Length: 362
Image (cartoon, rainbow, N blue to C red; front, top):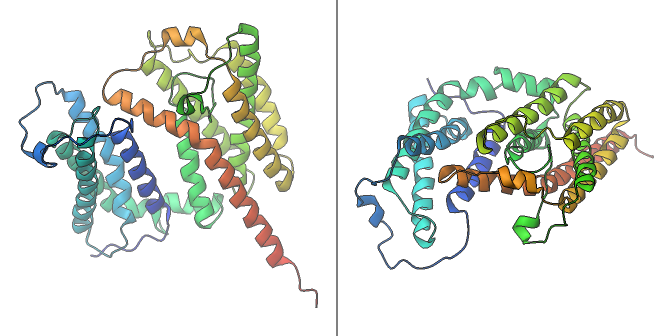
């Protein structure tokens, strides 16, 4: 039986977004480009690396499993499940091969045939699952699609919004910085930080946490067809869980609640009731307040001094963990600007609906 075409654009958006994230993770940092003077495909015949561990193999495979899973249902052709899985794995392998070739020009990167094989195998495993169960998630009969149709705005605006909220969860994985904070551009732009003062830091941290909580909750509400508190609460709790996971993984000793400073706790206590009140506002006021608090949280995040106590405890692990850290730092830095663009698109959609619903003057 041939696979039915997915009716939602969500798997294609997810596949594109995940592919871009893979490209960034494989090529970061983008500096020191040079011509190696060697055949670009010379790495394909290289012997087995001496210092390769089982963890390296697992991470290379696992990184491409989600890509294969969303790529399989994103393919537009009506193919049998096996053909769909093979085509998705082939496309993912082509992406991996291209990135390995580009790594020849980066002194901080070493192209590897083992990486290529693990990436392709991971994509194949994910594609087999995606070809088998992807339609059950994304087509008309799938649970995810039915939930999306009931709860989330229709069209690309809703699809992109869901992906953006997924990026917000990814942006919580950098272990340093306040809870829910995004948009810190100082590291990307090499900007100086303000001198540290404990009291000022605590007040700014509380303001950043509260404003970020309010902005994220309102953005999620603007994507929903009707007021539902549970999905918004689940999103915020997932953000706290992601922050706790990152803290336990990247700080020594592993303390999942290391982020729960007095400033973060004060921000949660102030932001939660503010969000509850803001959800009762009309849609236009929620839209404006979401944009305003998002801008305020971003500005405050760039004014926040570096906390020397966090810096002394902070430890980013080597290898793939370092690459993943760079990826999450980029997502965290860019997220509020993508969210502002999404809020603008939501505002235009509301205006268009109102204009279409108005009776003609004549």
